[in-house]
Amino acid sequence: MVSKTEDELWDIYTKDREKTGRVHRRGDKMQEGEYHIVVHVCIFNSSNQLLIQKRQPFKKGWPNMWDLTAGGSALHGESSAQAAERETLEEVGVRIDLSDRRPNFTVNFPEGFDDYFLLEQDVDLERLQLQEEEVQSVRWVGLEEALVMQKQGTMIPYWFLDKLFEIRTMQGAHGYSKKNIRIGLAGVEQIASWMSLIEIVRTEDTGLETEKELIDYEDMVLKCMEGQCAICACRGNMVVGILLFSTQHNMLNSIVVHPDYRRRGIAGGMMEFMLSKLDRSRDISVITFPEGDDRGAALRALYRSMGFGPGELCNGNGYPAQLFVLHKMEMEL
Image (cartoon, rainbow, N blue to C red; front, top):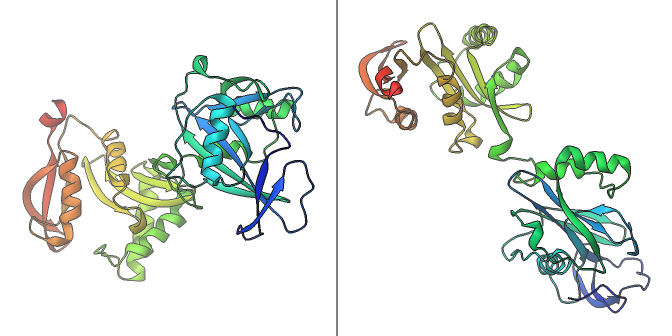
């Protein structure tokens, strides 16, 4: 395996990350306006532990400190992903495929671009081949222990270390992932975001056309929150899904998901949580648009997926409606 020596050549980039066609020899001084690419690989296991390596005491730059899984400079002719694959194989003996991956994020430093690749792989530590001139040892570490090591001064002080354990599951700058959507009982502190969602969907046959109807609805939601009959799905502090139910009538009253977050399992997750709060020894029901009405097609499909079946026709606030029922016998089975 190749060791890092001063014979390494790096491609030189502009501040806009465009190749200049020039190369730089490792160890020489970078000129103003010249930049190169450095890569870092963070391998997590399925238990959300990070694979870290301890650098050799004779290694230049953070000697004898614990570091991320692998890293180093991209060599002449290498892409960022190719460099990350090579460094990981050289330093810890793990083969990774980044052919269809871009860096999860990039941090600029005075002389270049630090690209970070975060991936999940359950690596067997006993089978790793460590690069002797670079790495003393490796281990798995959880978030809390990693932060303790950093506080003790034994781990390189990456200022975003705690965020790495979250970023690996996120998509995009705003941090969406199924894993960071929280579903639970709604509290009064979430009423503003709840009502903001209602403003977005109020034209979707919610029956909330006037300001008075909105005010009355907000009062009703606050009572449901106090009675622990309101469920919300949140991304951070933003409410992206809402559900109201009645323990007295053992039924789902209403369910809404933010338009940008639909078809991501949020509605089903809220219903599963609701079912844990209702009496499973009784029928559970919901009133929706009747069969054949296009306005209720998506909700009827959701109810069926949760085990509900069509029941009797009824009246829902002045419009034709239909009960969908999750029968108690089916729940007991």
